[in-house]
Amino acid sequence: MKKLLLAVFSSLLISSCAIFRIHEFGETPGKPGRYPRFGLKDYLIGQLDEYRAGYDVTFYNMDLDLDPYNKMIGGEVAIHFRALEKLKTIRIDLYRNLHISSLQLSGTEIPFLRNDRAVIASLSDSLNVGRDYILKVKYEGKPISAKNPPWSGGMVWKNDNEGNPWVGVTCETEGASIWFPCKDHISDEPDSVRLRMSVPSGLQVVSNGILESHISKPGKEVFTWSTHYPVNIYNITFYAGKYEHFNDTMITEQGILNLDYYVLPENLEKAKNHFRQVKDVISFYSRSFGPYPWIREGFKLVEGPYEGMEHQTAIGYGSGYSNLRRLGGDHIIVHETAHEWWGNAVSVSDFRDIWLHEGFATYSEMIFAEHKKGYDSSLIYARHWLAGWINNKLPVVGPPDVSYWDSKDNDVYNKGAMVLHTIRNVLNDSTLFFHILQTFYGEHAAASHVTTADFIEVVERKTGKDWDKFFEAYLYNREVPVLNWYPGSYDKVQDPDSNVTKRVSFVVAKWTNVPEGFSMPVKLDCKDGNASLIIEVTTKPVLFYLKDMSSCNQLICNKRLSYYKTVIKKSILEEIEIPFKNH
Image (cartoon, rainbow, N blue to C red):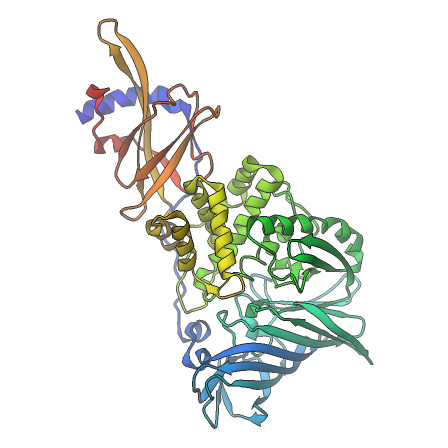
């Protein structure tokens, strides 16, 4: 019987296949990617050993001199911390090429040894649990220069078009200890930071938070900036250059938000026009996710000597004052501003979960395109800029405790974004989807670090369903889910005497490249918009009759661009009985 059915359906496919249009993308490379061979150095960076886990940094007080002509930095950093354990050995971090001349705990010089970037200090007495201490570090040297900022980080030493020094730093993947001594682990955010930096006369310094003071001294300028919000260690930053400053304000539900812009003088008028879009971006994200998180310290765009970076309240901007037509705005402004919510307020404690920063910020681009250009245009944006640039060589969620993130792999950005879009499509309820995002943000913003498990918990709590197999497929496996299906139709005899027939359309479908027990709905749409059908597809082949869609001239599968591959597979008919006699 099965062979007969195959023959019948093969003849029908010639006519029926023409009415189906499939959005095709999503390939799984035959050869998987490989993680580097992790060694002691990787665990030294990524793991919270007992010497770093036993204390909590509350405040960095930094007093630094920047010499852009000799590419030097140095000064004193006071690390305020609270003891969590009775440590007699404590560790901080600083790249080995930077020299430490003094290390003091509560005014007493203490001995230390260095192992790569680890600085391990021996204490004469154990720390008292719950007590606050100050570790002062004097250092200087030539920090490593960035090879390809911001993706390959370090110091960026440039000159503007007038020959003035123009300096910045990016260190998300390399760590902040590339330029100052700190507890260099993203799980420990200080509650506040003060940066006092001196630079040659004629230059300005811009940093996180608010400007406390500016003092001119012979031959130099001294700027003091402070932030009183928790901040990712890699987001502590500075920019030094000859800047023009202009400002604006906007009304939010929380009150007045100050907007400050620091740009090179030749770009002042251009920036005044181009940065008008910032208000719309912030307003849209505030409606979509929740209130802007740093209302007391405002929002800054700072023209930096690299493309862009989400430094908290002081976003680096360097994309040339241009908009993407499909996006409806400047890509750097749209993406990096989203990080104020996703990455800066909601932050991970291990780079294995970095998709919660980058995937969410990238999906913010897509919904911003929807806001500016409409839903269909946002799908075009996703197809060309997101879905088409996914590697699928490694899982989205990476290995723990090694501080590993290959910034050349786009999957934490683009696949992470497409996973969110797929969740939205599975729910078939945008209101519920954005309620999930708002809940995730509201429960975790600036209060704690998050993991992928925390996001899954919110999704399951708000939907009342088990999503384990979904996230296992999309985040913990590299393979693209494959929808194997076979569309067809046949003539059903209505009246044997008159030989009157009725055309019956159907689909047989199942998922492969997914964990056993995986289930996900697929939506079929008539191109004319008159009808649609949601079918629940599992790892077992199921027959679906398209009772209300037989008149469709064109049936579209995956119109809303969920992330999976579709394959018309005739052999699927061999796995299921098609009961002609009953229809």
